[in-house]
Image (cartoon, rainbow, N blue to C red):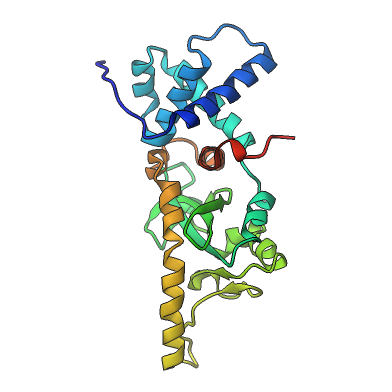
Length: 260
């Protein structure tokens, strides 16, 4: 295979942060000699997360075996996942804001043996469902663990405690029609029903303003899915949650919590 230089659109601060975590973990484990130092392993993992480079490409570029490249990437992702903020930390941030935005997104995956749980009828493709929380300026605050894509958006929001946490914190949250019935401080647009075939002028006006507010939350989804690895996950769907947490840890940087 031929190799060529490439670039990763991340700051040196991000690289140094991950390298420090890897270096500390190696010291703690007192492991054997490694083919790549902590900085090179961090760069390899970031190239995979940010650019979506395949393991085979990374192995060629860093002059290691495919197995070694796979192990290095997995180690870095698991290490970042342990340093990601939990739901309580995200809610402490949201509690200081005027309001929050809740939205669901589908992360495409390769087909698996048991396809039915992962097939989204809405998106007409296989994937995992991730709930994203944004602030009033569209900045990414947090994301839920991944569930099979066949579930309705309200189901993972309830399963992971997002709805109860937002309601108990009394945070006004704007969401789309998929979250109707959540109650509490969750605000959803008006929806036509069997006994209400038409919306009033006031209800239509409320819906228009609701859409304008909620549209800002798409920035948070774009921030999360800007990592090319999420363009289509080519690993086991069960690894999706660890990858999401690793991306959140990189996004929030050194301010992320330390594992207990």
